[in-house]
Amino acid sequence: MTGPELLVLWDIDNTLISARGFGKLMYREAFRTAFGRELNGPVDLGGRTELDVIAEILEQHDIEHTEEASQLLAGALASSFETRRADLPGHSEVLPGALEALQAFANDPRVHQGVLTANLRSVALVKLEELGLAHLVDWEVSAFGDDHADRAELVTFARERARHIRAFTDDEVVLIGDTPHDVYAAITAGVRLVAVATGRSSKEALRDAGAETVLDDLRDLGELTRQVWKTGAQGNRTA
Ligand SMILES: [Mg+2]
Image (cartoon, rainbow, N blue to C red; front, top):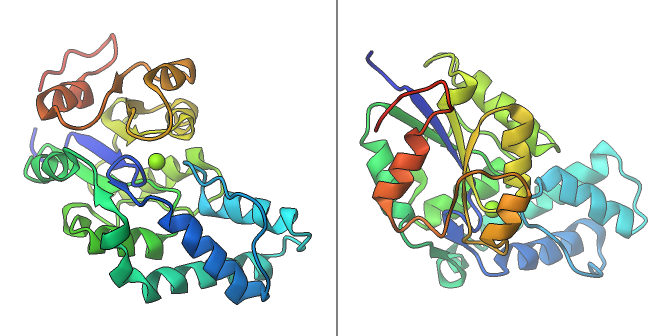
């Protein structure tokens, strides 16, 4: 067979990069810009889609959840990231092994890779551009927080966008992510998952959420590659 055999979809935050609270800072700035007042309370961003987080923030602040209000905050968030993009490298880092893994898969003709992230598309692009990773993934075969509020639905978007390359089967789609939200998305969409305990969730928490494959991090490229290529009981594919 020629051409890609595997569609790898990367989560961004705490899987490829760590932005150490920069996202929360941007939310506070965006909320102030959009609604002229301060954001109250903590913002729990971990793995949830941007549309989902925005809906909760609006509710917490007694702002009616209209399409207009949601777009106002999303637009302000995108603007904040764009304006502050030069500050991002100083407030974030590429996680160990991420660059090497992305490069290895980008150089492997059997793999096609994109991102599947809770971030808005424009925010995801700013983050990976500023950290030097953007050129390694296919942005047209990816899915983002502005596609749908439900992370599992993002898998459908990415697969649809990959159709011109190949109709990847469930077994040929692999998510790589760090939270129970990533686990939920893979299980619900019926695709495979390699979980990494590089975020706030422990290996145990990821296993409890249903992840069968959990790595400490992305440092061991050989192990990551083996797990990404491992198929289900009916499969016998080897790397
Ligand atoms: Mg994440």
